[in-house]
Amino acid sequence: MAVLLSALAFAGCGGGGRGGSPTGAAGGSTAAAKPPARPSAISPPPAQRLPIGISENNPWLIDPGPVPAGFAAWRDRTAALRPARYRLFVDWSAIQPDPTVPVDLAQPNDGCLRGIRPCGTFAGVRDRLRAVAARQAADGGGWEVMIVLEGVPEWAAVPAGGCERGATRTRSRPINDAGLAGYRLLIRSLLALGRDLGVPLRWWSPWGEPNHPGFISPQRARCSVGSPSLSPAVYSRLVRAARAELDADEGVHDLVLGELAGYGNPTARGTGIAEFVRALPDDVACAGTVWSQHEYAQPDRRQPDAVGALERVLDERPCTTGKPIWVTETGVGGVRAGAPRGGDGLRQGAQCAAQAAALERWDADPRVQAVFQFSVREDTAYPVGLFDPALRRAYRTYDLWRAWGQTPATAPRPQRPPGC
Image (cartoon, rainbow, N blue to C red; front, side):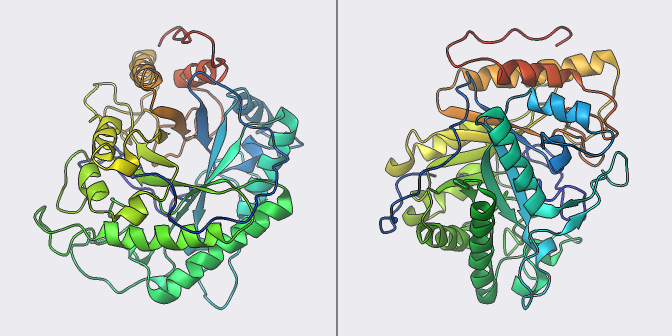
């Protein structure tokens, strides 16, 4: 599972099966009752047979209004997916490098894909949420936002130590006490922005891929699978802080726990799915509404059953038994996710068939209640998107996802598109 860090064009991204050796619990909150929630002005997501979501960093592929040259046709294709949910990454390390300056939720972005056109400047998280608000209004619902937090600023990180990879940066290290206060302020700032733009922010992931060293490092004190994982304790601090901050707000907010990389088994630098979940204390494991897992499709069909592994370990604890699961990252690229994709018809057909098989498997699983494609515009460092980076072609998997997004809840499973 090759990790995309803030140096990459996408703000945030990790996923099971992204290179290396790889492919979280929910329940009632133990916190005090929330204040009465304000009613939402946005309609609920559309009732789809297998509700789909997307991750996309560029608001010009979302906004229904005027967009820069080169985006309009691809924006319309994105809208045709009819996503029920939209997964928005917030890279804290990029937007608050100085603790004395507030988080910059309108940080300028050139809108290119690693310098590849088309481009179109936008104002960071603010413009992404603004585009979602416009799309929700235009479509009459859908596009329900899920926030994913990640990236520790240097001032908020503990010093290096333990079993770390050579290229580890401060954004991956555990959070210190000052950082924990800043993390809560980040959540407060996002809630205020959502209110300002009229976008309900119900779903929150406290941290992306906490069992992967690209997002919490070190995972172990010693480079041995026999060394206990350190990341569950780090993650627990974040979950408790997020839960407390969200409970203090007047809106309706639910935690999506996990966002786990697909390590079927523990490694020297990565924490296995079951290992991670078992190590969480009850107040954390029982704090959320939904659990989420990353699992990428591979044409050779050798990917581990990460979703099944999560289901099994959740069923070991009463408060998480039977909890719903969202597959918050999936996609397909090379033989191993992240390898060169290949554009010929044979390879595209095999990729599409692998993704179709995964969607059909999750559709048959009543616990899987949403599946998110990562990403729409493809990143050259991680080619699992639906459109090429230059926005000149759609891959065959686009037709597959569109078919699922347009299938009502009561309709039969959609047929695979030609060549899939």
